[in-house]
Length: 144
Image (tube, rainbow, N blue to C red):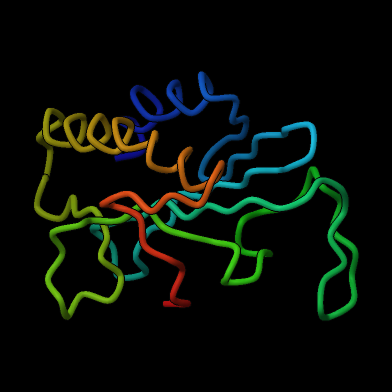
């Protein structure tokens, strides 16, 4: 999955102004900082994109430390300031509702189709970040 992300998703994120590597990305605006993370299900086989927007500058955490802007990740944001891009057709009992790649095995084309699909959903992420618009694959962060 990671190779397909590097090939298809990361360039789309970069074109939208996000910088980062691996699974954590940020985009700086004049007055806001957008954070995005690829989050894998702890049991494997699926992922979501979690993202949020905050005001620029360092973050004073509730537990004390100040985190510099350049070191922030989306997990530092309060739940109400975050949302997820997730699988709209996930079963109702799937609380993670991740985009599944379980069972893809060595079929590179399946990984690439999924990465392209998620890259194609990034306008929904931008709409939520810029004006709070909730697209069909966007869900408010639920703390799961």
